Image 1 (cartoon, rainbow, N blue to C red):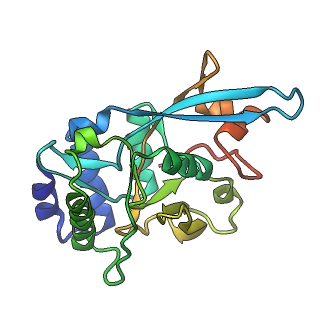
Image 2 (cartoon, one colour):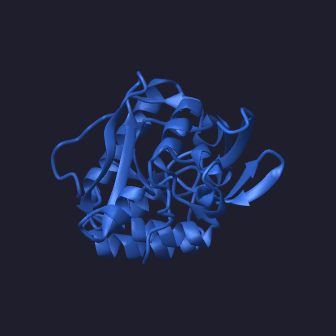
Image 3 (cartoon, rainbow, N blue to C red):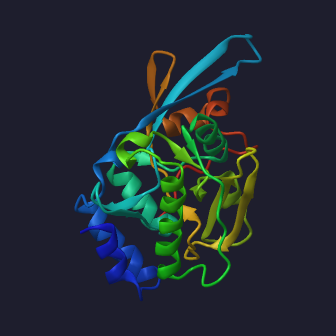
Length: 246
């Protein structure tokens, strides 16, 4: 199925039907091949106790979750619960706020955000926004997707955050990012939406769950549980929310 075909079939779908449709297609492998070549992002911290620099590398999808072929594909927007199922199946996780900032800094292609104001949670608006982004890239005479490298600034990220487990309301989604060209995020870290609220601006960035710390590979959960090493991935007071339940 191409991206155009996906949106043609999904046009009238609400969030539940759209989630199910996306899960079916992605689990069947219906993703552009360029999206499967993850890109290294490097980060480091200074251990305050020892004064030593600790370096780490993690690997992220070059673009947001999409369906289709390399010739005809489209970004898709889903709930964090559906995103978590996909992440689990691919041995991945969703980024933190700090990681979204670091990914933006590392991005080879940065675009000015294009907000939309009507029917934000409708499937046709999601398709339209994807086309707008591709129009921006065409205006830049960009390479084909498989050769663009890491792209950022085009959507907010669904993130993992300690704010989720400490929110007074259950079943929240945390969103953050959508950086302007000056590096300022439009969206501060926010947990005000119920999990099933999904609009055109909320993208899913997959991150491989094994992090290289120095010469050692660590699972991201083990890293986030370490009071020192967690700072490589997380800049919040609490870094103990690891995944969405489904």
